[in-house]
Length: 423
Image (tube, rainbow, N blue to C red; front, side, top):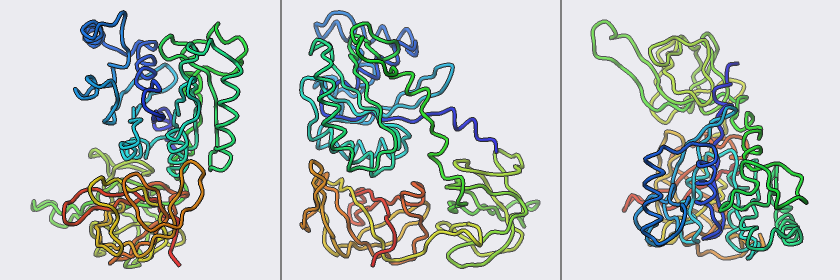
């Protein structure tokens, strides 16, 4: 199966407490891999000079908003792209302030790897734990603990070891598949692209080596075929009056012409007649391709339906067990309040029927509290007005993720990871 073009791309996010050096780290990566245009560099040099600083402030390469530049912090999620001979990268530079945790969830939701930064002077703090926990919930399999600003603690091995031991003690209770710990100085470039002479006691990989060699082919689900229908194509031209195509993005598995499929929730079965992309016929379609699929029989399928295989289809339920991250500053969760639930290509009315518990992100203890507000993480049950066709988030992030929208203000108030059927 030809998926190498996807394997060559690594999506990563940065996370950590405010002023841990996330933007400087990304700026260093872009600078040291020569991924910056000359006019960009000149603009950053001028901005650095206007701020009365010497040299070049690499954090300005990612802190694009005026409010961020004035405050010296990151508020929005800044996306940057760069490449090395081994791999392409998309970086999401996410905020460190606790009030912007929702931005971190948004930026990291499709990432394969997360860099959690820790200030060597401060050690593991609340935001370190919060972001590590969120990375675990989001099923980000590769975590890099980057202990930054080692230059400000004289590159102390003892400081690094103490921070690593504390973080590993916390991470032992999380679902982390792969953890790499690296002592760095984003400002000076220590152990970012090349090994540092300042840390002779460290014999691990550099950050760039880790990014280039982390295995990410297994991040997508290529086993369970899932095709949420986004749009039904019915051309009105005479020559295509019989054409009915189903457009969407493959959310899992592989589809091939001639294979038997089932359209859910109706349960009708048929076979794939053809698969098209960019006006070309395909022999197969796989995650995450966007394609148009035609079927042998005229089955009534519409937006929100899902095409799967007869002996491998998602669960169907109206009562869901969900881990929810609350985003809204203005409105806390309303018990039994009505929301719009969006899942793949479907939208349905929903109601949070119960808050089972909230999570203390510092201790991971369960809190028997029903009030859920900004940045809270809670396990809840949700009832929907229409059946939802889903997989557990741990099995497929694409068919296991949901968002809640306030039907009155149309504000996205929460993102959730489906654990399974409720009850």
